[in-house]
Amino acid sequence: MNLKYKILAVLAAGIALTACGGSGTPASTPASSAVPASSHVAEEGVTEPINLRTWTLDDLDDTQTTTFVSASITSGVQNGKLTAKVFGYDIYKKEEIEKLAVGDKIAFHEEGAAWNQVVNDAVTSIEKNDEYHLVSINGGMEQPGGLDLKLEDDDTYRTMTFDDYPLYYEMGEKTMPLAEDVVLKDSSADPQAEAVETTGADAVAAAINADPDNWTTYNTTLVVQGGKVLEVRRIWVP
Image 1: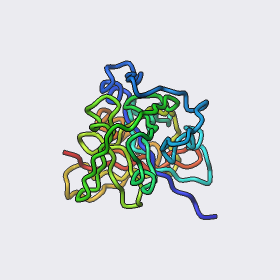
Image 2: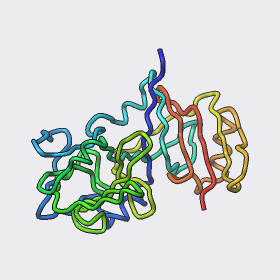
Image 3: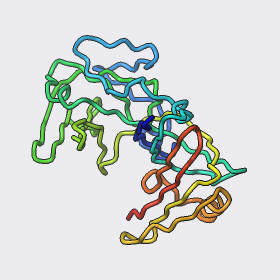
C-alpha cells in the first residue's frame, strides 16, 4: 500500500499564545462567533477550510500515514521520547476563495486558538493581489475579523501572517518515542551546509539534548509514522 503523506504545522505554545495576549482565546468581534468545531454545522454561504475537523493528534499514530510535522522541541529527549506542541493551519480550495463575495461568511481559526475554536466572520471586503497571488479579507489580519491568504503550488490557499508563516492554531501536545533507527539530518550550520546525518535513538537524543533551545517550528521538521519519530530534520534559518 502506498503511504499517504500529510504536511502539518507545529509551533511552540509560547510563540502562538503571545500573539493572542497569552490567553489563547480568540477575540470576539461583532461580525463573528466562536463555535466548537465538534458541534459546528456548516451553513449555506460559509466557506470552510478543507481540513476543518479532519485531523487530530491521534492521526500521528496511524501506521499507514507518514506525517511531516514542523515542530518545536521544548524539553529535549527524555527516556527516548520527545514532546512537541502541535499546531495546524487552515487551508481552502482555490475555487471557493475565488468565488467568495462580500456578504458571504468564512470560517477560520484565529492565531493561538484551540483546534475546536472556529470563528465565522462576515465578509465585508475583499482585496486581491494577482501578481503575488494574495487575498486580503476584511482588511487583513491586522484588522479585527481580518484574514490574509496565500495561494500555494497545489492550488490551495492557506492563511498567512506578516512573516509569511501560516496562522497557527493549537492541536495539543504530543509525546512520541524515537524509532530505534531514527535519523537526524542537520544542515543548520549555515545556508549552504550539507546535512550532517546522525543515526540511532541514543545518538539522536544526545544531539538534541546538547542543543536544547534551538529546535524550533521555523527550523525543525519531524517525520512521524505509527506514533514514532522516524526522522528529525533541522535547517538553517536567519
